[in-house]
Length: 123
Image (cartoon, rainbow, N blue to C red):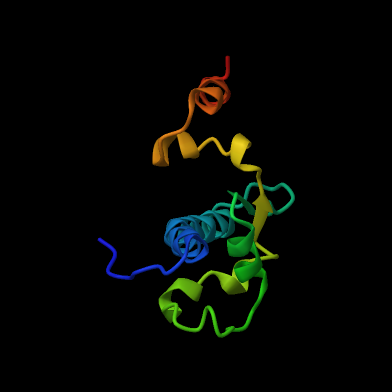
């Protein structure tokens, strides 16, 4: 359970992104370590993570590597992934109508629900 309170949707998205990347970064590191222990005799694979975000303010917060008056109150624990952005992690913008995860996180209207369902099911 999270004890932080977000004051805007951008902050909430930033916190959620941080929590998701807390799971991804160790997995990427583990894959790199496995490659060192069990060499595959092929070119060293580059492990990158593409994250799709529909909140442009959140994307701007990840690209800035300094605090602003509006973001200085966000706990430091949410900034752990910042050193990986641009190198191992790429955060891309996706339009809200194309964000497949929205079907799980909020009620969507019928004109969005059915196309999102089709995208998820691969029909």
